[in-house]
Image (cartoon, rainbow, N blue to C red; front, top):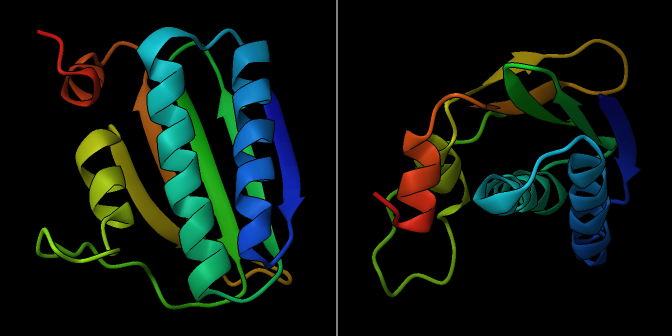
Length: 137
């Protein structure tokens, strides 16, 4: 399954985009804790693009037999940085969540109106991320 949607450059677009992603992932057969983990990570990368980048912002979701890949494109070449904020900080954890919970992640240059894509993958056979997210053993 492959789907993509344009994301409005406003914080108010984050919740509807998260719901859109949940619907597409559910349609693709993603379920249980893996669905919740993917929706969390989608929310983080979309929030970063809307809050720190320029339009156009696009969310792409691709589910195949081996993995789910999510990409968010935006109009800024600056790449996200993994931070380790103190417990009292109100933000700054999104990329850290992606770094610690996704099977892999990165950035790549885009052609056209978008400058870059931030992507992450969650392999279907890799249960370690799911266990870290859900606390199961």
